[in-house]
Length: 70
Image 1: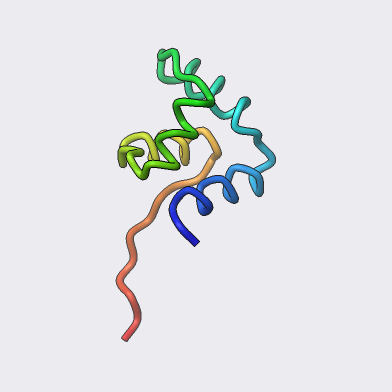
Image 2 (image 1 turned 120 degrees about the horizontal axis):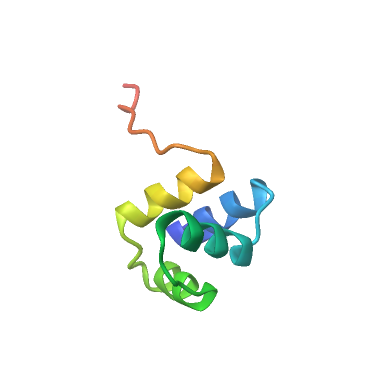
């Protein structure tokens, strides 16, 4: 699974829609994004790490780096 599919699956599993997520991101981070813009970033693989962190925050999640067990 790629990043696009991972993020979309997490959005759905969290009980959100792309529309609700974009609206919450716009309100929380004072911007004027669109669902199409987010969808394009996911499709092209151009989503910034900062944006991924913001998505996680709105969904009530955190991104965590862990060392792979040997």
